[in-house]
Image (cartoon, rainbow, N blue to C red; front, side, top):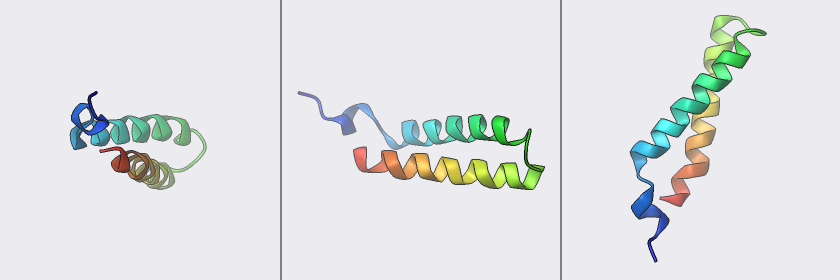
Amino acid sequence: MTSLSSVLDFGDVAAWGLIVAIAVFAVAIRRLPMGGAVALAALAALAAKSVMIPLI
């Protein structure tokens, strides 16, 4: 049985964090000014990475 750490590496976690950040930025830019959308996207990327890092 393969472990999840052999399938998922840090690059994948960073890529998913970036994908989440782009999606959140695209939604937030309609309602927030640029600085707020960037801050929200950065927080979303950190949250996604913090959820996925224990899986490695």
